[in-house]
Structure formats: structure tokens, C-alpha cells
Amino acid sequence: MMISTKGRYALNILLDLSQHADEGYISLKKISQRQKLPIKYLEAIVSVLNKSGMVESLRGKEGGYRLTKKPEDYTIGSIIKLAEGSIAPVSCLESENCAQACHCLTLPLWMKLEGLIDAYLESVTLKDLLEQKIS
Amino acid sequence: MMISTKGRYALNILLDLSQHADEGYISLKKISQRQKLPIKYLEAIVSVLNKSGMVESLRGKEGGYRLTKKPEDYTIGSIIKLAEGSIAPVSCLESENCAQACHCLTLPLWMKLEGLIDAYLESVTLKDLLEQKIS
DNA sequence: TAAATTCCTTGTGATATAATAGGAAATGAA
DNA sequence: TTCATTTCCTATTATATCACAAGGAATTTA
Ligand code: FES
Ligand code: FES
Image (cartoon, rainbow over all chains, first blue to last red; front, side, top):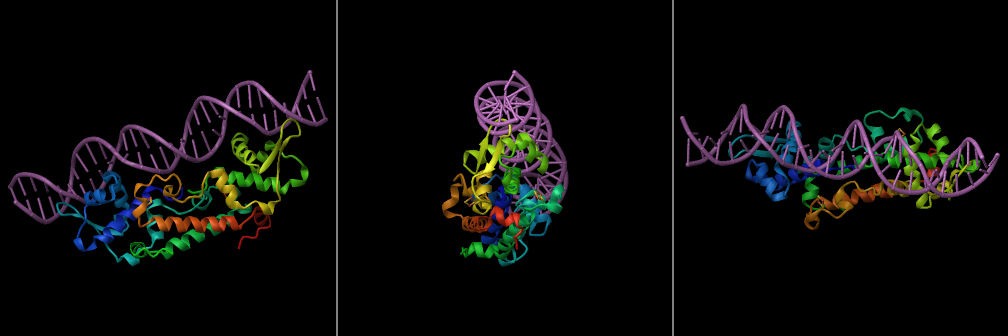
């Protein structure tokens, strides 16, 4: 599995924030209820989104999160890469731990595969998902 | 990570068998030494390849494994799917455990992504890797 | 008969996933 | 000012998967 719940829930959070962008700050409690996802887990995930500047937060009563950009300015690729850490389909492509990388018959395959995945996920935005414009 | 060592080692085994196809049955010991991979782990992986008919085996002295088809008749997709169980980039696409699948904004995205990955991996064969014909 | 090999079941440590627990700090509303 | 709400932060836990290793039975050729 390349994309775990971290990436999927991150997308769910940002989609929910997009759909309620006119309501000011949205609390995780509401997102948790609407998306039926565990709030404590969402906390950890939204923390990464917040630190990277994808969302901004307000503490306290009536607090919550909101988008910092327009939905069309978030690529799915940037979201998944942030939440998951990487979209590499094999470990050879991330932590440079594969010793025989210099003379490996399969490395070009993995590189092209990752390029393919990256190009597609970078070509789709939150807005596309909201408008269901997938093929 | 979509493709673990299971899939990568399965590829390594079949590539090694391809490169030594003229030497009759090849033992895991030799493959293990050449590819520098743990033999006991290879045993488990080759067992799946054997049961599916991708390779055939001979027990006893001078025994080992050999390909049942020509390298150009093995797609990378078929190998990875067999060794890994699936190439689905998200769990929603395999065990039908995602309750909100019927009204999910992201499901079409995952389906198209899997289609993309599958199409590419099915378009490449062992022969292509041996001849380094990747882009 | 002996050495080599596949084949089969079982176990195991490490790591990643998917959370949960508990509370400190901040904020707006009453 | 007080209080309910919410983010924020640091653990802890439970489960599953990964990546093997162990031991031995069955098979085959030299
Ligand atoms: S570089 Fe990792 S298997 Fe080739
Ligand atoms: S179907 Fe699984 S997240 Fe949408």
C-alpha cells in the first residue's frame, strides 16, 4: 500500500475544509463527525498540514482550521507527499539504502513508475475532486 | 510503499533465471549468492512463483528452478501482483472495507491511479528489463 | 549411500500503522 | 472573570505486516 490512512485522511480533511470554506474556522470535532474519522488521529495528521502552511489554525472556542489557499491551488501530489512523507513505490527510491543501485536492472523501472505516479497526482487538484472531474 | 521486498526479490529471482536460462535448473543457493539475498526468504517467495506456474522446480541434487516461458512473456505487472497480492495504491481498492465508497470524492482518483500503474507495469516485460529498454 | 536441493510448517524481531490517553495552553462567549 | 471549547504537545498501546530464520521431511542425482 502506497497511500495509508494518513494520506487519505489528510485529503478528507482538506476536502471537508474546502466544502465549508465559507463558515470560518472549522473544528476537528465537526470534521471528525462528518467524515466519521477518529478525532485524536486527525489531530496528528492536521498538525503536519498546519506546520507546512497548508492550513491555518485558531485555538479556543469557535476555533479550528481553514485553508490558506484556494482549492485549485492544492495538488493531490503535494498533499499525499506531505502526509505520507513520500510517494516512492519502492524503498530504493527514498533512503538510498539499496547497495546495488548502480548496476540494478530494475531501478530505471521504479524511477519511471514514480515519475508516472507523481505526474498524475500533481495534475489533479482539490477543486478537481470537488467537481468530480476525474476522467 | 506499494512494492516491498517480496515483489522486488521475485523480480530479482526471475531476472536471474532469465540470465542463466541456458544452464538448466538453477538452485536458490546460486541465486542467493549472486543477488546477495537471504536464501530462506527467497524460498518463501519462489514458492508462490512455482505454485502459479511461473517457474518449474526440480528437487534433489542438481535441482533448482527454471522459467516456464520466455522472458518477453512475463509482464512486470503479473509478477508484482502475484508476489505482493495486489498493486492497489490504497486499501479501498482491495478488500472492499471502505464503507463510504458509494459517495466518496476520492475513489475515482484511486481507481484511475491504479489503472495508470497497472497499464505501465503490464506494458513492461522481463525482456525489456534485461535489455535495459526503460525509456 | 551421501550430498544437495526443494518443500513445508512454524517462530521471531523489527518496524509501521492506526490509533488512544492525558493534559497544557489559548481563545471567545457568557 | 470564568468557563466551555478547541488546538497543541508528549506519551503509550494495539495490531499488523515485513523480513527474515529454524528445523526438518521429501526428493533426486552422483
Ligand atoms: S536499486 Fe533497489 S532493487 Fe535495484
Ligand atoms: S473509498 Fe476509501 S476513502 Fe473513499
